[in-house]
Figure 1 (cartoon, rainbow, N blue to C red):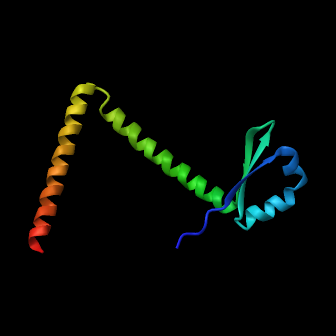
Figure 2 (cartoon, one colour; figure 1 turned 180 degrees about the vertical axis):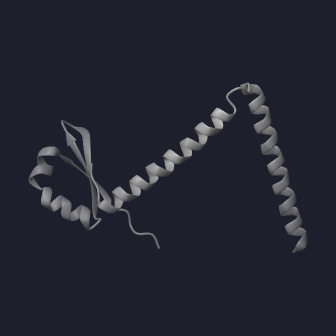
Figure 3 (cartoon, rainbow, N blue to C red; figure 1 turned 135 degrees about the vertical axis):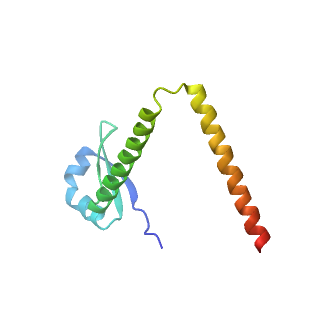
Length: 110
C-alpha cells in the first residue's frame, strides 16, 4: 500500500524563520511539505530528505530519457521530417497490427 502523501503548507518567509524547528519536525514526520513565500512569491520549499532523494532519482531518469531522445534525433538528423513521419506511422501501424494478431491468437487459444 502506498504511503499517504504529505500535505502542502504555504508559509511566509518570516513565519518560516520563527517556526523553523516546528516546520522541520513536521517535514521529517512526512506530515507536510512547505512552500516558503516572500512577498507572496514562492521562493523555496522544505521537503524531507526522502522526498529529495526521490526528486533526484526522477531528475536522473528524466536526464537519461532526454539523452536517448538526443541520440535518436542525432541518428536521424539528415532524414527529412516528412520521411521520418511516414516511417514512424508505418512502424506504429505494423506494431499495432502485430499486437492485434497476438491478441486474436491468444483469444482463440482460450
